[in-house]
Structure formats: C-alpha cells, structure tokens
Length: 489
Image 1: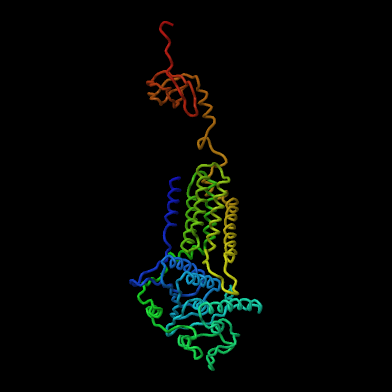
Image 2: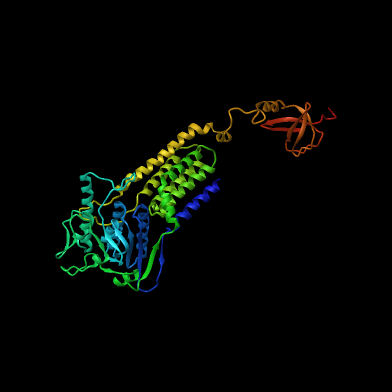
C-alpha cells in the first residue's frame, strides 16, 4: 500500500501545478500591446468574485495596457462588489487603467463598478443606475425591511463610497449620490431637472452621455459605442491585442467544491481517522486523501488556496504518512499532521486581498471580514468529524459489515489457533518413528500410528528410515536419522 500512497502524493503535486481553469483567449493579434477584457455577466455573487480574483491576478501577470469590464448585470452582493472595486483600484494603482463598457445593464452593484472605472462607455440600449443598497430576506419573499438606524448606517457607507469613487475618477458627485440615495437634493442641468428628489437616478445611454450646459462635460459616460472595437478606438487602443477572459467547466466545478467544502474536508478527515484505527493502509486512507485533494483543488482553482496553504496540507499528509507507516499507534505526529491540514483548510477560506489605499470615510475590507465565514466552515467540519466518530463508535461495531472485518469473540478449533495441537507436537519430543516419505528435508513420518509432518535436520533421509524427534519449534517437528548400534557393541 505504500506505493499507492506515493502515487497519491504525486497526483497532489501534479494537480496543484496545473494552471487555473479560466484563461485569456486571444482574439486579435497586433503589435500595439494588449487589452484584457473581463466579462461581468449575471449577478455579482461569491462565484463571480472567485472568478474575478483569478482574473485580476492573471491580468497582472499579463501586464496589459488596459482592462475593460464588459458589463451586463442586475447587481449583486455589496461585500463582493466592494472587493471587486478594490481589485479595480489596485489595477489602476499599478498603472493599468480600467474602463467600463456597459453592454446592456449596469444596475445596483454594476453602477458602483462603473464609478470605480477610469471611464464609462455605453451601448445605445444600455441603462445605468438604481444602486441603493437593499437586504433580501434569507427565507425568500423579497426585500427585507430594516430598522431606520440600521438602514441609514448602511446607506451612509455606500453614499460615502460612491462620493469617494466619483472624486477619485472625475465623475459628478451629485449623480453618484442620486444613484444610491433617493433623499438626494435633486440633480439638475441648468434649469432642467435630470432627477427629482425622492427618486433614484437611472440613466439611459443618451442621458448619461448628454453634455452639460454648465461645464461642457458629459453627465456620466464618455460616449455611446456599438461594439468593443469602438471602445478600443475611443480609448486610443484600436491596435491592441485583445485577450478575453473566459470561464471554463472547472470554474463551475470549483464553485460546487467550495460550496460543499466543509463537508468534503470533514469526510476526508473522518476517513483518515478510520484508517488510523485499522492496520496497514487501505481504502479509507485513499478515500481521505482523495477528498482532501478535491477540496484543495477546488479552492486552488477558485483563487483561494495559495502556496502557503498547499504547503501546510502537504506537510500534514507527510506527517500522517510517517504516523501510518513508521510509528506504531497514534501519537503526536498524527495529531500535528491533522492540525496542519485543518490550518491549511482554514486559511484556504480566507482570500488574499488586493493592496490598495482605503477610500475616505469608508471602512476598508480586511481578512477579519472573512474570519466569521472561515470559523463557521471549520465548526461545520468539526461537527462532521466528531459526529461521525461518535456514530461509528456507537453503531459500527454492531453492523454485519464490521463483524466481517474483525475477529469474533471465540473461534472453533478448526477456525484458528488450537493449543491442544501444540501440546501434541511437544509430546513427540524424543520419540522415535519411521519416515513414510523421502525427507528432503521435509516429508512425513509415522509415530505411534499417527502421521506427522516433519523436517529433517540438515540431511537427506530416505523412505523407511528410523527417525528421532530432536526439536519442536512451533509447527515444525525436526527429526534426524536414528543411529544404528555398532556391530562391535
């Protein structure tokens, strides 16, 4: 079984060395540098956030001239949006501008992403706005009503965020505020009321690109375009090499694995615990390692687990291997191995956040924001482990499956070791008999009318010779040819 364990370790290294599943697909080739296109399609949720983490890391590795967010989203979670905004700001801080191309809808969280960009371009039928934060009921049924103070606290944070983004990227503050707060003082362009007080602002492409009579600048977006190529032309990168980030099947698999991650981790550790309770290395050990491999592969693809987490898990697996193969029983080495795996699993839930200066008057995102989720996942894993150990200890010994794996309370003489047979063999010591077969060196001899399997003491003994038992070693009865009396005697 040791070689199977080595094969599994090799598989771990191979899988973790594979590149992430999302890939940048070439669409045009030119000598004008590259532009990285990142689609933002559908609701902005945890799954999309995982894709964004990897996509921005891939973009940083490619070093493009610009990143273009191709947006068509009804919105999504505020926490996920805030982290994506930090990724956008980190890219711009690194010298890579990020433009927003609103292909259809940029509502709610989509509007916030647009405000974080270096410039907004919209298709003819696009809409942007309605970014007031709301809380959906976890049990369904639509929007959940919040106490006035809680609602104002959440609204004030988003209001401060959009004002800071507007100031940072050169957008109109009153337009940004009107998207998130219906109690804004009103948005006007000269004497024209663009958005009256009490209403959330929604802009069509023509409204957003309308030039203000006050300063000659567009109200929000820089222009109306009909394709990505026109966006590139508008930003002066029409000769750029376009690389579009595309999701693949492994991304869907990674979302599923991260969703059921605590279950996989708990079952994997439980399988290893069962392996410790059984001799050798078998199906439970292989199952446990495979489950851990699936768990960390999913988190690696999702951009959560990095080199440090993988190193901890590999160290834990090596310590467990030492415990299984080299050290009898279960002791400190096995405990440390399990702790390394649990620590690596916990760190794999906490993402590596972008380094960026916090927005004014907005509490920055830190790893502590993810500790609650990590502790919840770890608690669920421990419940699976200890609950499984308790159930196995209580019910498994009574099952027919378990009875087939262990020795029963009593064995019949013919089913196992028989102490009377040992006593019978010991009684042959010193007795004389006759060989019934040739002994070379093993064969059969007859003692007091009973056939006995014997072994000659280092010499050839022919058939029919008189032999004497000189030793009984376990099941081996050792004989030698009996010396004939001398004729002179």
